Length: 351
Image (cartoon, rainbow, N blue to C red; front, side):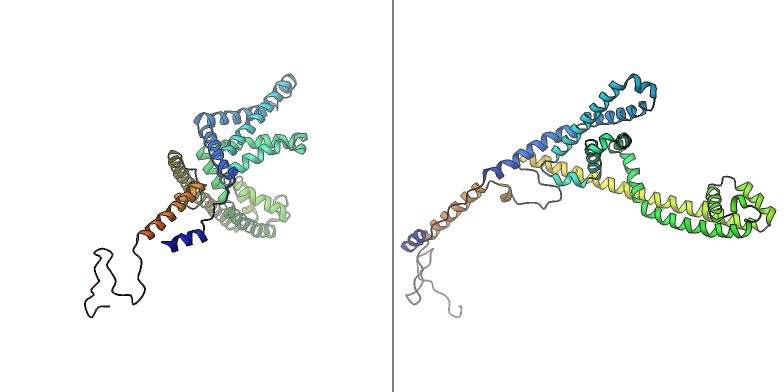
């Protein structure tokens, strides 16, 4: 026991390092701000209000196309525009506040980036002085309606995902147009210079024929040149108007299915995150950022409380060690059992 006392005296337990009070106090404040802001932004009345503001902005933009109304209501239209800008600014600030405890999630959403870019561009000096750019930005606000209409959002996402396939379609279509335009120039340039006099005119003619508009007149004009022209127009209509268009439709439908799957996964993740956040709020623990690995309970506890528990555990181990009987030196005699206090008799043959 004296050895333990000497060891405690020689190796005192170091005092815990002071914890900066700011780091402990910031997280609860940010969590409280985010929780209150989410209560507002996730409410149905908030979404309806923003949707009405977007439609009002679109209506004001349309009213400004009438010169007489602009001259009579110039002041009121300017005031309404400033009110819309102020409302959209408050909306984006509330959305930023709702992600105060997990700011990275705000910038992961492309719709949030689009809204932020549209609102911030309004305050740029160059944009405010340019009426044309300002009107285009106001027109871009109309696209924000897709945020509140899930079906429209799915269609826009599908169009974006179909762009790579559409570019391939355009490349194949351009190659097909060029080949048939050269063939048409060779056979019909002399007899129909208005439509096939050059490669540019031939491409324009075939591009219009892709919609089957005027195909009857073109076939009749071709038959006056040669009866084999029917093969030219039939093969072009088959490839351009049926095969390529169906390929494009297939690309768009595939992208639409992928967009629906992405929307369903995003909704499932949002519901799971909302459930975990509600559970964390009910338990009094701060909400973890989305995508972060789960932390143990000690990681979210108070550091001072953890240090106090460690010190108490050390003291309990020292007290338990003092209560144990001393271990005799080797060769000092038979060992005594700690339970019966009798010499341990090990049967022969056992170690």
